[in-house]
Length: 235
Image (tube, rainbow, N blue to C red; front, side, top):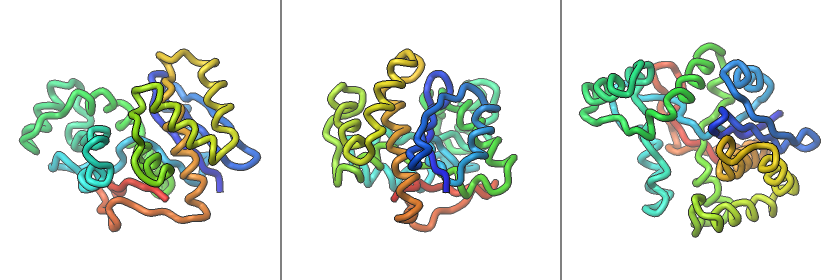
């Protein structure tokens, strides 16, 4: 089974795989490139909302994830747009649609990643069965699990990045090399250090899930109107 982790970045998406003998990374710039690589893998953990509400602002998986992350890290979980607002042409229209359905406005943070949410949503609807292999996860929850508890430095700090990288290096010898090479190849404005460590922890756990199995938040996730699960996947 081929596995990978994907995180969004300024250039598009960064994909990393820790499959033994096939370890590699690549940066994808558009929907065509993303579609091409998604077809090559059997399981992918991605840090992007999959499965959207129709008329409620917050998904159950987001509410439960905030609780398990704790107050220090709950802000790393934001509510994605409802599906009717996803395809609005402007932030103003998306905001209005969100308020009409939920009585809550769409955050600017959610709107800023709407193009990526939409891109992934379109591909999962286009390809039958991809919703079973392209799985939403959350790097901060994975890092907490990797550390057997709390991560004490946030990743917007150098100490936070270093701590996460050290945890990954303990588990996979490729982590340090990938981090160094990707930093040399791409400007930080295009692929951030946090993007790299996030993609790596997603890749690590996607790989681990083959032998150890999958768990979800919530335990029995509902599906959206398109049949996509609204769940955070982990090991």
